[in-house]
Length: 118
Image (cartoon, rainbow, N blue to C red; front, side):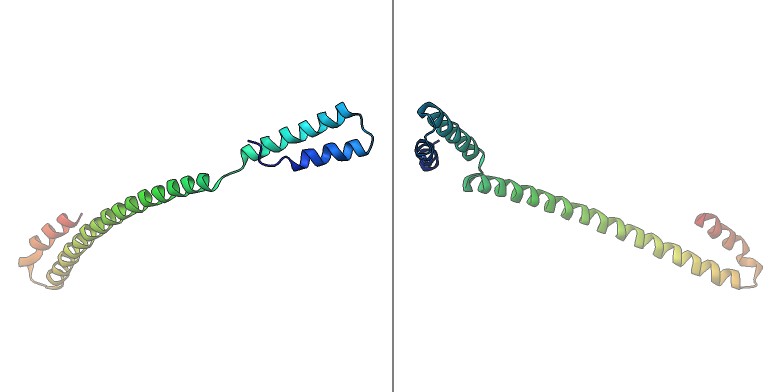
């Protein structure tokens, strides 16, 4: 992949003008060309970026689906917890009313409900 050879050629000519021996000037120009080609080979292309962006988008979609699924599970668990709290609140209300009553008729019922709550 030799995209631009202007720099090595310019270097070669400058070294020749500076009276550097031809073999050294050619070696320096060749080394510069090799280094430039190695750097160019490591550059990211627009296609590389597009592929990476597509992968990131796919992963983001997967994460979004997983979060949606987790949110549904959490919502379901919250509904179960809320219904259990409602039942407990009803029991507590009944126990409170019965306990507030001075009638000994309700003592066994209050005790039974209290046992259920524990």
